[in-house]
Length: 118
Image (tube, rainbow, N blue to C red; front, side, top):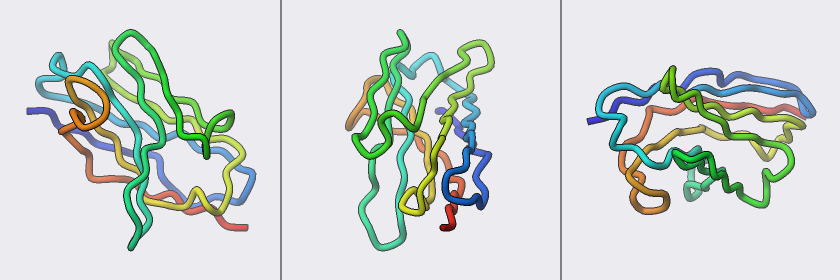
């Protein structure tokens, strides 16, 4: 079992920055991939980006060049640095972990809300 807790979401103005954190505990050695996702009420969940244990990252086109995923393995924490935020980035942001990326991300946090106003 893995327990994930996201934090850092808040309301910001367009063009601003935020850093989200995701603290992992439990059987985290099982995790080979971690990722950030977001969801707006009534819409499908969108993958923001992922990072593997060896540091390989992948991002959605909508956030490339603005968002950066990083991890502190010693602190078992995943980060999402979000710059140049836009109103369309408003969503509930979730982190996830699994043995591999994609459909193998099977542990999820409870989410943290990001609201970007114009």
